[in-house]
Image (cartoon, rainbow, N blue to C red):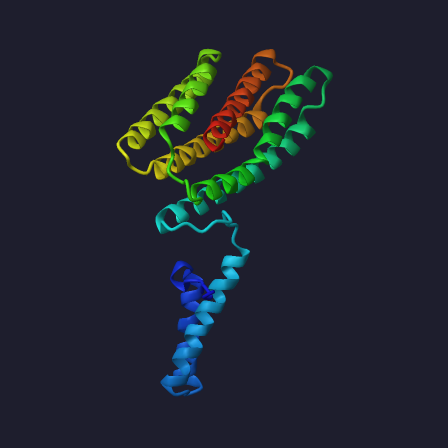
Amino acid sequence: MALKLTNPLHYPLAVLAGGIVLVLGVRLVRLPSLVAVPVAIATSIGTAAIRQKDEPEAGIELEDPKLEAEIKALYKKGKSLAEQAVALRDEATERLTGASQMELMGAVQYACDRTQELPTKIQQLGKRLGGGKSLLSAEDLTQQIKEAKTKRNKSSGAAKAQWQTLIDSLERNLNLAKEGEDARQAQVVSLSTLISNAAGTLQQLQNKLRTADLSSTSETTELRALSDEFSSFQENVELLVA
């Protein structure tokens, strides 16, 4: 089995490290080019390997480099959202201490706890898309649309709008699948958009938590609505990665 080297061009720091070694080797140490160049290349590859090891990955290699890069970027977004949710959970636990605030605190904690599953689910999606049967089938997408419509019909307000947006996205993917095209990338883009929107709602929730008058029923109701909206985003995500 051939050894797969990390491409240093994907890591600017690795390219910089190789360049510095090359310059130092040739100008200061005065090494021959036949020695300095291989040393510089080895430095770049070694640095890239270290960066890759430290970098969160989707844990999957795909034949399509663009799709693989998007899955890995998606994993990072999911991991970042999970970390932000942990911070919010801790903040909510500290601020929501009154007896009348326990239900709200429980709702926020539940929404934040569910987010911790996101990186693992993205890994699972990456492995599924990288399998032998990686093309999304019309049957799978049709089932996802059916489930999304059921959720939409049971929702209201912002949550209902979110479900409709997801349905529109899934229907576009279904058209791709029916045309015989690979809808995987469209699926990943849909998921990336959902995570970005969820991150925006999470930020709104954090801002509101910090500024709200927690003795005001209207303000705590708004906090609960944001918490429910954030939780709804996660239901959208779970449907996509199922």
